[in-house]
Image (cartoon, rainbow, N blue to C red; front, side, top):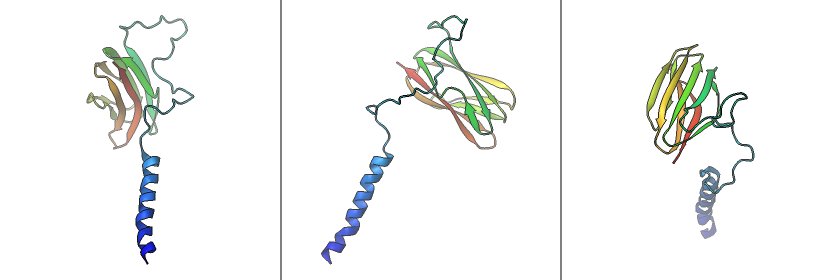
Amino acid sequence: MKASRWIIPVVVVVVLVALFFVLKPSSPTDPAPTVAPPTATLGTPAGASPPTSTDPVVADFVVSAGTADGPRTVEVEAGRAVILNVTSDVDGEIHLHGYEILQNVKAGQTRSLSVQADAPGRFEVAFHAHEGEEVALTELEVRP
């Protein structure tokens, strides 16, 4: 009888430990992915002048049928200007979380959200459709 009394607590502990390792956020010591996701700071288009440190970083996004097309990460140095251009097939708003900047977008039109990226960190940029749907656009990574 004593052995069966300990079985349930032991099983609960084992399940909790397993869940911890499965659900824990990745740490900075985790190896980087072998394929880098596209960013808005990669390369210079053919025939274009290379950007200077004073040029704004510009990223373009298209929201269509509930998905977003554009760079997954926009990387900038602190103090740099950023312009996010969004075209959508539905009315909604661009939301730069952390900076709490909102910009309305009308269906079929392109709107720009401009920000001076002064606060270091990673900030989610989302498109909130007026019908209630939220679409992740990118993450703004501001390096000190």
